Length: 103
Image 1 (cartoon, rainbow, N blue to C red):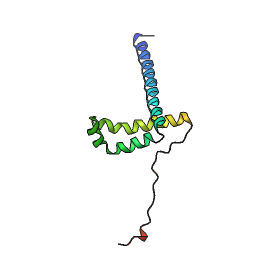
Image 2 (tube, rainbow, N blue to C red):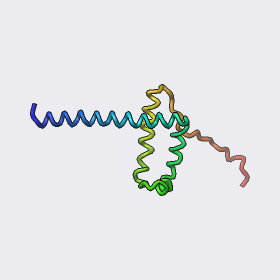
Image 3 (cartoon, rainbow, N blue to C red):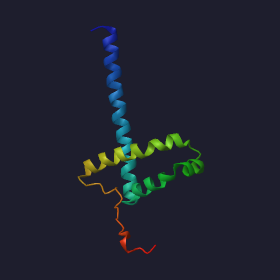
Image 4 (cartoon, rainbow, N blue to C red):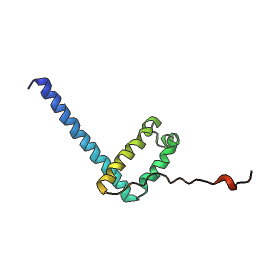
């Protein structure tokens, strides 16, 4: 095996190991939030709706915070897959009958 192929194989193995570590840490954080309150992450995601105000409060660029929602939802899905539970994070929408409203 050439030196380049050997180096590439080791780099690939290291990337996979690093991703497994990151996934494990992220799932641990998700689990900690769920242990605090089963609605912790749903509530946190609703706070992220106003990311500009939250970024000012925490001193974190809003560009970074905009990526949080997708990452949290990705790891929530993995959490529910390992727990065998069905996620109920979508807001329930109600339709309002406007035919009874007087104008």
